Image (cartoon, rainbow, N blue to C red; front, side):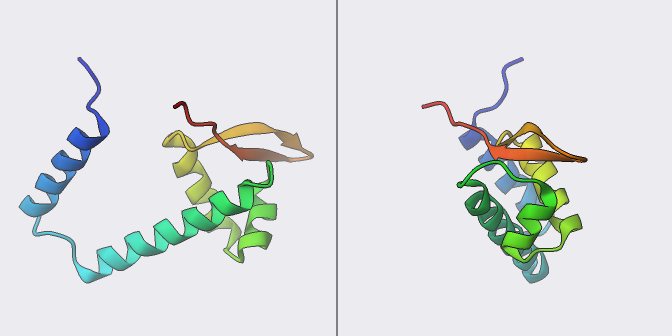
Amino acid sequence: MNEPTRPEWREALRRFRERMGGLTEVKKARQKAHREARTLIAAALKSGAKSVPAIARETQLQSPDVLWHVMAMKRGGDLREAGRAGDYYLYALKEREP
């Protein structure tokens, strides 16, 4: 079975949200906060690989929140592990294929 394309996935998600009653203001605010956090994390990683504590210091986000977003971004294919520094893994932006 072929994996759905991004537009197909977005359309399926839109239909699901409609069936579930749409997005509440609370959900919209949470999604906005997640987008903003991931934008900050990506900006911090543009200068090179960093650990979760280093990203947290640079972005002023809490380390547990940074870890949560980093794992989600890694699972989503936006980040990759880039080695270790002491006890911490380093994370870097994953290069996008054209």
